[in-house]
Image (cartoon, rainbow, N blue to C red; front, side, top):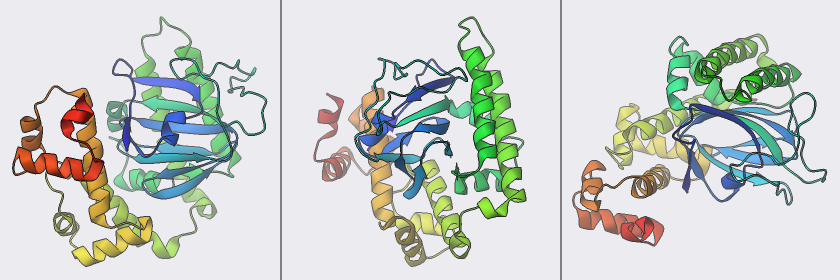
Length: 303
C-alpha cells in the first residue's frame, strides 16, 4: 500500500482525474475529498467496503481512509503532469472526457485535514459517524445537483490565481455539505444502505479503524484495540472478518507498514528513531518486522 497526498503547499484543490494512482494498490489518504463520477464505471473500496461509482455518483472520503479503485475495462484517461484533465470542459464546468466508451473520469475536491477538523467542530458526532457510514450516493439527483453547484462555484475562485480566500470558501462549502447531507439522509431513510441488521457490526468496525488511525504507533496488538472498545479480542476478530475477510492483525500490520513507508520516504529520521517512535523493542525487531511484511529492508525503501 502507498500514501496518496495533497501537495504540502495546498489547502485544497479541484481537478479532473482518472484516479490512476488509486488503481496501483491500496492507498492511505492524507487528505479529505469529495468526488463525483463524470464518466465510466468503477468499484471503489474504502476501508474494506466496496462502493459502485458511475456517472453522477458522489462519494465522501476522509483523511486516513484506505482506498483502492478497480475500473471496469481499460479506463486510461489522458492527464497533464499535475494530474488535471487535458480535455476541455463543457459549458457547465464538468469534465469533458475523451470520447471513448470505456473512459473513467471524476471531478474531485481535495482538502487539507485541518479544514475537516474546523468544518466538523460544530457537527455532532452522530453527523460525522453517519457521513462515514453513508458516504456514497448513487441514485439521488438532489445530491448530484448540490455537488455540481458547489464545484461550479468553487471553480470560479480556483481559476482566479489572485484569490486568497480559497481555504475559507472551501470550509464554508464543506460545512454546508456535511450538514445538508446528514439532514437529507434523515429525511430520506430509503437512501440509507440496506444494512440495518449489520449496523452494529459496521459501527464497531468503524470504531476499530478510528482507533487504529489514532494509536497505530502505540500498539500493534489486537488485544489492545479490543480493550479500548470494551469487547473481547474474539468478538473483534469476528467483526473485522465479517467486514473485510481479514483478521484484525492483518489490518493492523497493513496500516502500520503504510505509515512506516511514509516516514521512510518523507522524513530524515534515523531507523533507530523510527523504531523508538513506533514502539518497537529495538532496531533489530523493527527491521525484521518491516522485511517480513514488505520483503525489503527499511534502507532499501528509503534509497
